Image (cartoon, rainbow, N blue to C red; front, side, top):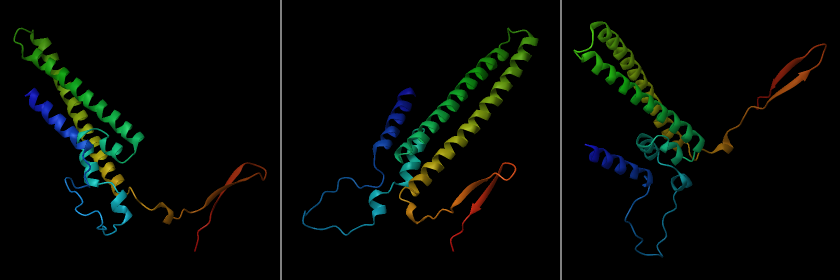
Length: 181
């Protein structure tokens, strides 16, 4: 079983290094043939599916793929923390489960062990749900970042907002918004 899990983990890690939007094994037949020009978004874009899959396989992998390194580190730390918390609570729940199932324990201690088992099992389940939510959010974020990788920022117009201090017998601030028509 451990060999299977190791193989599965290593093979899935290889996905991180495979470009998702390029074809493999194709060579140019004729160097004089000119390729039809493609839009710049296809040449420089990121594959949303590739980002999503990388985010599933490796915590923060999709964010690293999209060159969002700080976000990738945050996701890596968050997912690792919650995976660790799940493992710790799972171990605690199993320890208390073995203790309360032990017939050699006195009844009062077995009752306490059962309550502890339920407590740690509930915490484990809570951390599992939180982990699933964090993984889903990181997948969604990686997908959207890849989709918007070449978003043209020059066409976006910001509303000019300025804060003007006023000193008329007190301290006040006035917000001025200029809306271009």
